[in-house]
Image (cartoon, rainbow, N blue to C red; front, side):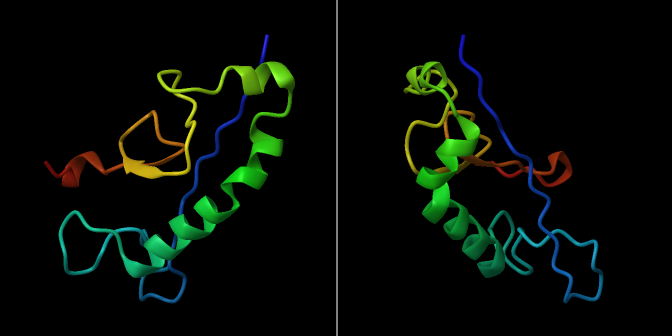
Amino acid sequence: AGNGMHLHFSFRNLNSDDPKSNAFPHDTIPCAISSLGGSFLEGILDHLPALLGLTIPSVNSFRRVGPGCWTGSDVSWAVEDKESPLRVCIDPATRCA
């Protein structure tokens, strides 16, 4: 049997008026990601291959990575897509079509 790991990030802008505010959404464009949020995603994607040592540490874990397995077998991000290794979840109150 293999094992795996997933992480949940909460990204806050501590320099804003409200330090508890979510830093991912764009301030003026609905359903868009802020430049700070985009930079955060770029940094994670840049280091994604190295993170495999932590998230899928064994040979059996690595064998389970592939398309259609909900394991994120490529370097990408997406909104609400469980196939992507980096998934951005949308607040249900502001869901965009």
